[in-house]
Amino acid sequence: MALLRVVAGIAAAALVLGVAELVAVFTGTGSAPAYALGATVVDHTPDGLREWAIQSFGRNDKAVLFVCMGIVAVLVAGLAGWFERVTRPVGSVVFAVFGLIAAVIGAGRVGGFGGALPALIGTAAGILALRGLTRRIDDASTPPGSTGEAAAGSGRLVGPEADTAGGTVVGAGATAGPAAIRADESRAMVSAGRRRVLGGIAATGVLALGAGLAGRLLGGARGDVSAERATVELPGPATPLPELPADADLRVPGLTPYLTPADEFYRIDTALIVPQVSTADWSLRIHGMVDREIVLTWDDLARRTPVEYVVTLACVSNPINGDLIGNARWLGYRLDELLAEAGPRPDADMVLSHSKDGWTAGSPLAALTDGRDALLAIGMNGAALPIQHGYPARLVVPGLYGYVSATKWVTELEVTRFDQASAYWTRRGWSARGPIKTGTRIDTPRGRGRIPQGRTTIAGVAWAQHRGITGVEVQIDNGDWRPARLSTEVSIDTWRQWVYDWDATAGQHTIRARAIDDTGAPQTAVQRDVIPDGATGYPTLTLQVA
Ligand SMILES: Nc1nc2c(c(=O)[nH]1)N[C@H]1C(S)=C(S)[C@@H](COP(=O)(O)O)O[C@H]1N2
Ligand SMILES: [Mo]
Image (cartoon, rainbow, N blue to C red):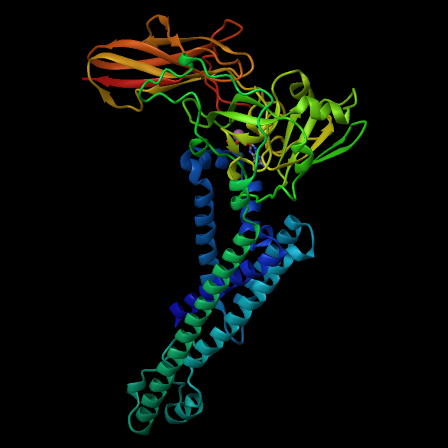
């Protein structure tokens, strides 16, 4: 019966989540406890652990989070079920405590009592199920009538389990005569009871699954904007992007292409459920330290003419030789023009951009107004923004790491000051300012592999957004730094490919690369971690040449 109690606890907890998922269809996806708790964990994960998770699991970091939460939930629910008794509802109390916490968090995330409903109603259903299942288990452990009669016959209680409510174990066969018959009867009743328990658990499981699936389907269908995105019409840019120079992409095997396809573009955000924002509901409010607050709707944007630029976006969490960087064509509206319409006050120095899901980035006002191609982007590589990359609108600012500039699902630009406001990651220990550091990556040869002797192409990409790359140098085994050949520069806002031909000799070799930006000085050799404002150091590759 102990195992059944554990399973009953887990089934009841599944019912909590399933019912909550269904209620959340009406109160908003953000209020489902699994999501609300997960998002809270994301917001409060210590930096070291988060970086480790991003770097170990990459794109799967969110899946790993949910699996870990699932394991904890199963353990807690199992224990709650194990300890629950009809006369001693410890497990129910555990459910209630977790349910209340989830309700408070859900209300907080959705901003209202409605957000508490999924957890409250789900928990109520779960506790009812747990009570019902426990009653059946307790009954099955102590068949009705057996107590008095057996006690009369043998002076002890008959019960097959040690965990009956107040019962002691007795070997039913140990008593002879009429008592043994009664024990047989009670054994039959026990197995009938056991069937009732199993039936109850199965029914709870089916209900949980049904409610959860229905919730997911209805909720997903309700908010999903992928159909809208597929048909949304984007205006053409004022001037079409000029053809890329022929040698902007050197097309070397193993080398990252100059333009990153949208479906290969790295994705980083705190969103456990990708926000679904319809153009009909979207607007951008520019407010704070401005002369005139303005609100732009999607239709307002449609009356303007967009521009298109190529910009290389990079994540501050990108380790040396990492792939949290990508280059795309962005279609959008110049932020300097939009901000000018609102008229930022002279003493403002920061724009705190807010997303639909409550995330924020703090960009220097100067970086958005100094003439660089900072955009409110609505298109990526010739199509509407992919939902994961911020549909319908996001920010793209050349030269700033994403965490201080690239707000996806953007809804507000709050003009303010660095000494008055701080953004999501700054509150968690990252630098308030995040200019992109000059960097390079070796793309090929990859890994610690073996390569054959002879002519070998070493190649990679280098970036120093909004300053520009003027050179890349390669060093073999602590030898002299030698210049690599660069692809044609498209703009100072995008990365450049580089290639170095090497005559590989047998043995082990260490290869390093370093980029040179417009200052003429190579990037720093000092090795530093990504926290608080981006990694530094040379990418290094060790090779065995056969
Ligand atoms: N709403 C929202 N926007 C966000 C983030 C986020 O967590 N939430 N992360 C930022 C970070 S850290 C980076 S590096 C870029 C990544 O953009 P991408 O996912 O389109 O590559 O988005 C930025 N915009
Ligand atoms: Mo990032």
